[in-house]
Length: 373
Image 1 (spheres, rainbow, N blue to C red):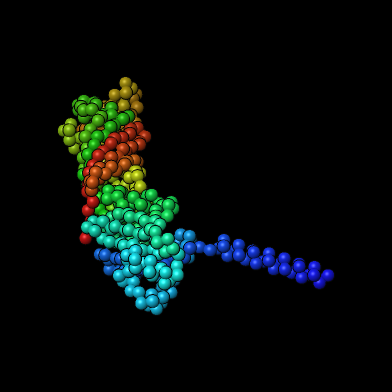
Image 2 (cartoon, rainbow, N blue to C red; image 1 turned 90 degrees about the vertical axis):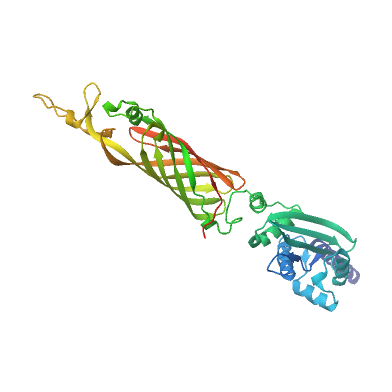
């Protein structure tokens, strides 16, 4: 009986010991030490750059990252100066004294208009460079920690945000708070030109002879003006815009039709597509008149009252013989901005609906990146 009890206790003990060994094996992660990361062209030093790198490396969860205070203590105990320990020989010596599996090192340098990040992972046991990664970024020093994180993820074949990567690496990508920290001061105003089409009653009046109140023209006119643009929100993938656009239409046909559009819209930082809407105000000539039984337009003062006839129903209508008045509408616009270097080329289509007539057209402009002081 005693032998059976002893045997049972022994089996249980061996099982617990085996489970503990398996658990320790499963939980074991290679240990990695990060010393200083060589920093050139920054206000932070190599030690601080090493701390940023250590933080981003720990986010992977693949390694046991040695605490920076432990690293500092062990380096002092072994009389190793981390300020100049960037080469493989020194790193291997430090790794053996620190008793870690791997050493992580590299540099972050400002070179002209670029920030170049170079990282290496060295296996202490085999003395082999296991992984390496070099990436070039735009000179956006306020985003250096993000750049370090992207480089480390690329190094270990982890997925990265390609939109964010484009913002930090491509010179001509659409601006946002990522690649332009002062984007709220960015001004993309510029000239606009295009054509506008009239339909409905407006088209009829434009084609009518001037003696009948028309404009003796065609309902397709050239227009030009200037867009004043202000961004009041620029975050993530979108910008919120306020646009003030004064225009002059019809000079190609000897007409002068001024207008103002006040639009509010959204633009995608990722694709350059935008949508805007808002009121538009035009200065046009209108007159009071009526249509006779033959559907011919007459001014109000042309009516001669006769016995047995009824007074006509007067209405206000576009008429070249009338007086200047303000005419309002509501515009919808859809567009996309194309880029060539620092030059932006916005192309927009617009539509102004109305009860009796509509306007629609297309405009093209250009502007370059500029900042307000």
